[in-house]
Image (cartoon, one colour):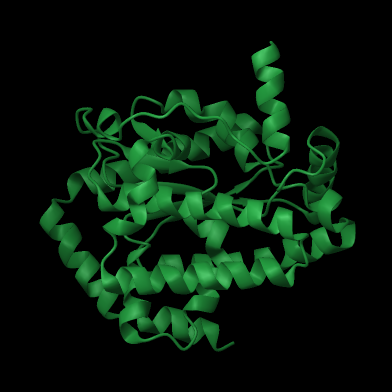
Length: 294
């Protein structure tokens, strides 16, 4: 009990205690139908992605990795070293846009740095999965596109063809559960978060106030809609879920979507996936540039 209380207190202060282990322990499992796939939850902060994930994740633990699995590995610290020069340039643009965005939100510097450090770790986890082979796919309730949605759109502006191509590759074998809800539902959830974890990095109302939290929510929703259009144009699949609907119905939608993406991947040999991806990246400038100009 004391251990759990201590962990919660540290988490509210922006720290996390994790048991570390080797990535080999994760990738040495026999291959599953989900292998190579990333299934990511997207939707504004406070909509209930983590709550939904908590209710369904045990059904998928044997077939999927979770992002916290990756963040606990020793290899996570050297993830950036796995990138090629062009990949590194693209990721650098995204991280720079992320840093500037946080600065523009006028967070106090200690909070600004805590959030940025958290996002760096999220980026490393995604890179580690994409650059190393695992027998299981990655099921993430708080993944790359959710965390870096606006930054990816910003980084694609006036980028070189090589950088735009690398940004497009981030969508390879990546699919999305896009959560929807009305603004009042989201704000009420953020108010509950403020009561439960005041001052935490994701306590938007406590740190910024209701008006600014709503402004950020609306801006994210606009960027997310553009991002989902890009994802679809690059071959990703998107399943919308209204979080305010009946949970069991949403669980069924979720299960059917997972079955569809794993079945599709299982039917396609790796050579076909490579051919499809080559065609996608050749067309990668069009979705980003056409949307970023509006």
